[in-house]
Each structure stands twice: as C-alpha cells, then as structure tokens.
Image 1 (cartoon, one colour):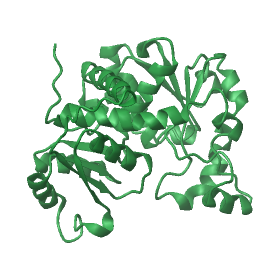
Image 2 (image 1 turned 90 degrees about the vertical axis):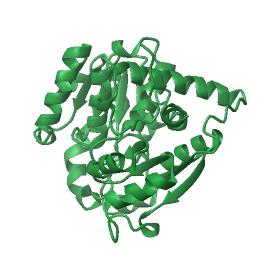
Image 3 (image 1 turned 90 degrees about the horizontal axis):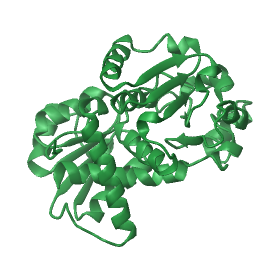
Length: 331
C-alpha cells in the first residue's frame, strides 16, 4: 500500500503505522545521499514554516532550519519573548492565525497538549520538536543511525535505555520500538520504575501484540544482556535543575561506563545519546556542580568519545530525518 503523509501532523510515533515510519526512514536515507551528492530537489520551494520554541535547543532548531532551507522553504522563529501565545492569546487563537500564514508549525516546549492543540486548530501539519511527554523526531534520527551502524533489521535489534526510565526519551523509545517490532529494555532504579505511567505502558503493550515487539523495564543489569544499543540521557531534564543532587544520588549507579558496555556481551554494541551530554566537566553547569562535589555526568568521557559511540552521526541524522518529515508532510 502506498504511503501518503501529506498534510499529516507528527505528534508522536504512536500516531503512525510501521509502514509510515519505514517510509520516513527510507526517505531520510535518500535525502541524506542527495545532500552529500550536491543534489537539491527544492521540494519545499515557496513553503513557509514557523518554529515555536519554549525550550532552548541546538540540534532541533538547526536541524529544522537547515532542512527547510535545503529544500527551499522559508523559516520564522518564535521564542517565548517574541510571541503572545499563551499570554495574551490562547493556543487555539494562535494556531488559527498561524495556520493562515504558514504551511507547517514546529513546536518544542513543555506540555504535549499544546502541540496537540496546535494541530487541532491550525489546519496545517504540526511537528513535535520535543515535549515533556515525547520526542519523536529524535527517535527517527536514532533509528536511521541504527540502520547505518547495525548489520541487522530493526525488528532484530535490542535497545537498552539507561537511567531515568520515566523521562520523555524513554517513553519515546517505547513508542518507536513497539511500532517497529523491536526489543526495548529500560534499566533504572525501582523508585522511578514505580512512577511509570501505567496507561502508557498498557497502550504500548497493545501495540507490541500487533508487531511482535518486546518491552521490559527492570532494575537489574542482566536486562541489558545482548543489547545492540546502550542509550543514555541527562539525569535532570529542562526545568528540573533543582533536583540535580537528588537525581545524581539516585542515578549514579546507572552511569554508562566501559564495564557496562562490556556487560552486554556484544562487542559491536553502540552507544547513543540524544545530546547534550554531561561526559566531562567542560561545561559551565557540570563544572559548577563538580565544585560542589556533585558529578552530574551520566556517561564517562571514555565511552562518549570511544569506538562504540555514534553520537555525532546520530546528531547529524536529526537534520536528515527532519528533512524527510518536512518533505513527506508538505512536499
């Protein structure tokens, strides 16, 4: 069956079929090859998109802007200081206005309901650049990276997410693995496992029954045995900085180390991270906490820079996969 995503929003991978996800990955690979060959199709010539950022970003903003410009689209950037959205104007009214001006909207912020309302009221494609509940564009890039580095199909791969098992990246990986028939394991402290959203787990496992995927969440390092991917994220998300000492105490036993990689028993295991990462003390935040005797690094520098790490290939693929999303839904 032919896949047609034109006019469709991208709010969560749970809204897409496996065939639609496969289409986006194949298109991303094709567009990446064309960019490297200097071929420019300009599939979005004359299109206009707006990027709404309530949370700061490096990769997401740059990926959307470069992807759009590569294909001939124009970009408007709105941060909290340059828009009335949610302050003097409701999300509904803002969405209706932007839908008259633009051909697509990207939203990166806090509440998943905001990106859903933008899609509901704007009448144009809306793309989720990250919320507290999900990060679907990251998973597209991650799957593309896996296919470039792992010599087997996705439905034969095992992804192990380490650390804060109830954050948006862990849930996003659950959704992606469930849809693509993959084996997902989350390894973290039981206190966080107990806080997982039971309704989300129920929905994910229902998808697994259709696709043959496996989802496991355990506080037992044996669960990462034979993993193809060890995946980590920072221990305190945006807006949670006050919780850093508490999170460090809880999650230090789950720091990704060379010993952890070796415990998978897979000599070809790859390390992935959505970035930014604390892997040394060369950032202001990490240095400030280190001076207080707190090590906020979720992965060792040895692993981050080592032979198993593919984090910069992964970062580049944000742009190629987002370009595929723009072309598929607007082109």
